[in-house]
Length: 111
Image (cartoon, rainbow, N blue to C red):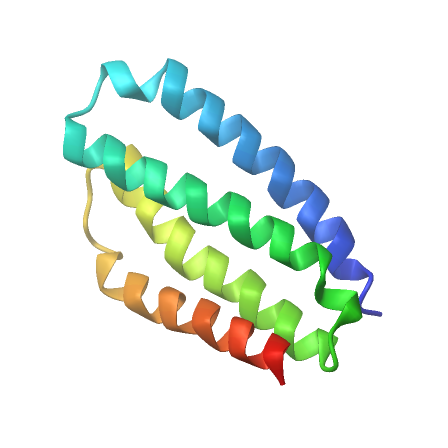
């Protein structure tokens, strides 16, 4: 069952590359430096945690680790991407929860 996270990592990796390319070749020309930095942060964390998903089947609690990482990526990276792409800060209040969920995923991986 934990192998589902390998598939999620595949889709997530594709999206990370596609969004990174868009950010570098399209978005950069149309936003200020702070907004572009937010986008780049989202993309960097997206890549890192996509790679982490590949290790999920090797963990002691793969379903918990996988879901924490996946939900954390959506919460942290997703809200950063949304803010950078739309200029709207509506969901920024959820960004720290996504970050805490990512941290919980890493701790769950350790134990």
